[in-house]
Length: 210
Image (cartoon, rainbow, N blue to C red; front, side, top):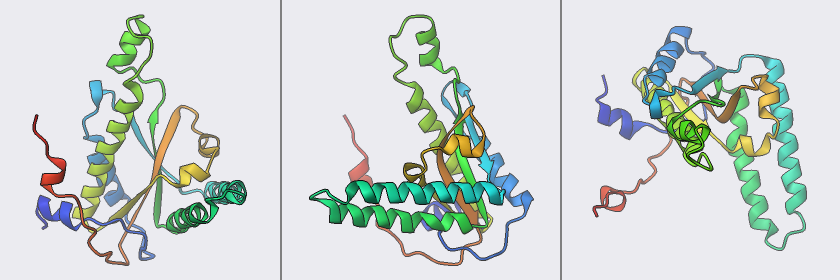
């Protein structure tokens, strides 16, 4: 069994998977670990929506393709268009594998949850809920970490994707869950690649004292 440090250090973003679909039991283990993550004010807003429907996937792919084409048209006449065009195409290439992944989730948060800052806002003590979105983003990140590391411990790889949501502009209507705000996608399955190590910033770069 891998140690915790090995799980963290060996983790890679996996975009190529074997055809085998992980069992429901293994998926539920990963979801259970995601659900144990802390959240501000214990609001527990994170939801994992497994996308099994071929119809929904087709609709997502069509919207993804349309969004990509829209950006290509918008950037065509810009002076700095070529580098931007290349980047738009690169993000499309890096993302479209998700439609063929063994398991695909949309990950989101329940709308209108009541954290501490919203409580103060509702009481008229704040003019704006400046913390609300940050609290939800923190909750998503912590849940995803649990999901990914549990997967790593049982031999499943994962990849988080946010770029597709730039291309897909009607996400909530496609999945049919108006009460959930989708923040990202995540794929999972048995890895069919071993991506190289990508250098990370060291402790001296990210650890500060004041």
